[in-house]
Image (cartoon, rainbow, N blue to C red; front, side):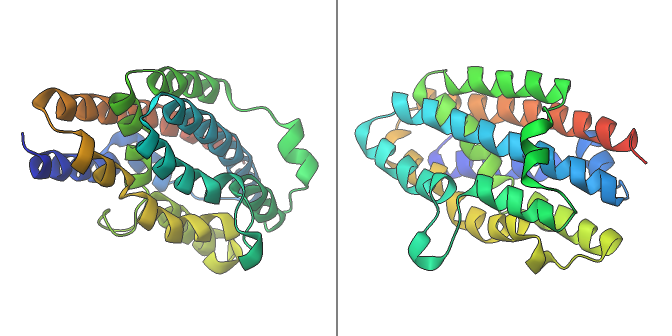
Length: 233
C-alpha cells in the first residue's frame, strides 16, 4: 500500500474501534458518582502509562522524530505555564475534584489488575522497532481525535456521558475538555513522521502492525474498565 492508503486504513481502524464490543459496552454504561470517581482515577494511571510509552518511543527514534515527539510530550508532561495550562497528570487530578475526589485518592488507589497487564503490553509495544512502536502510541491519539473519528473522540463521548448522567458540564471536566482539543493536533503526528520515514512497503507494514496491536490492547483495556464500572453501584 502507498502512504495515502496506509493513512486511510489507520484512520478506518481507529473508527472501527468504536464499533467493537468492548467500546460499545463501555460507552453504554450509566455513570454514577462512584463510577465516575473510579474511572477518573484509572484514567490518571492510563495517562502515566502513555508518558512511559512515549518516552520509550522517543528514545529509539531518529533525532528529527525525537523533536516531534518532544513537542507533543511537552504539553502532556509540563503544560504551558505562560498560558496557565497544567501538565496532564495535574489535569486528571484537578478534574477529579468535580467528582468529589481528593488528590490523595489518586495516590492511594492502584490501577486495576487488567489495566496493569494492558499497560505492560503497551510498554512492550513501545520497545519494538521505532516505527512500529511510534504507531502503537500514535494510534491512540488518532482514536481520540474529534477531527478524524466520526461521532466524536473517546474523550468527548465520555465527557458527554458524564454531563448527561452527573450534570457536570464538559467545560468543567478539564481533563476531558483538554484532550478533546489537543488530540486533534496530536493525531497528525504519525502522518507527519510517515511522510518522511515510511518510504518502503516494510516501513508502512511496520506502522500497520504497531497500530493494530495497540488497538487490540486498547479493546482489552476498555473491557476491563467496563468490568470495574459494572461492579460498582
